[in-house]
Amino acid sequence: MNFQVWAYLKFIFSSNNQHGIHSPFVYHFITQCLYNNSINNPAKIKVLKAYRRDLLNNDTIINVTDFGAGSKVFKSNERRISAIAKNAGITLKNTILLYKICTYFKVSRVLEIGTSLGLSTSGLSISDSVSKVITLEGCPKTSGVAKQQLNKHQFNNVNLEVGEFNQIMPKVLKNNQFDLIYFDGNHTKSATIEYFNLCKSQIKNESIFIFDDIHWSSEMESAWQHIKNDKAVSVTVDTFKWGIVFFRSEQPKQHFKIRV
Image 1 (cartoon, rainbow, N blue to C red):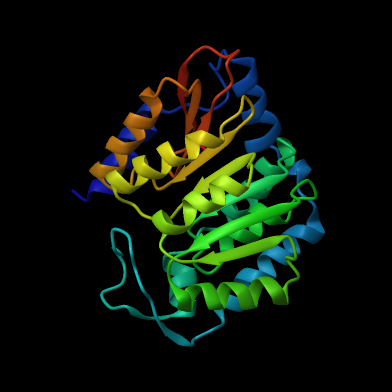
Image 2: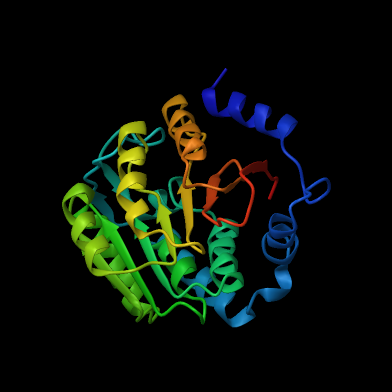
């Protein structure tokens, strides 16, 4: 059986919705943010849809440089932009969830590790509370597409940095403070843990880390377990797609699996 299928079946049988959640902080997060569509601004959702539509209609072929664990979809580094957006990009639902999380927690400054075509960047940066997003991308071609798209749709609060993450991250972390960090750059255990440890220098009580594709492979599941066990981590929410991490000292250490 495919690893991700098996991982998803295990998740379904062990996950929950808001019922049975005894942490007021997590219950409120689930009901007033993850499950709450009333906080969505229709004009902003329209922009997110237009951003995605542009990419889905773009059949330009680019040569992708992949520094991570590779792709389970593409056999070649020559890829159509439309195919990347369709098969490897974040879904519209999850793009909107990023927007909702930033809005709910009134996030101001965001770091994104892994821009790709900028789909998740659009969700992270469109909230009224977000003043600045720094997004990192290793591939010059995909970052070029993202920069063009972000400019076209007037995401003026985004600063895109291009280079290998282990070279540019230390400088970015040294010179900036972030409320939320979104990890979607290199789906290997060693890199995920390395980035987590680097970014821990940034944490404050209200910090939020979001790790993408925590059940992508056995390596990523192992990395996720390592992060959950870290002494600095108080609360985690596993949505299958994401691992959401909180560092709130007033919260007892608890781990939740939530169907979104």
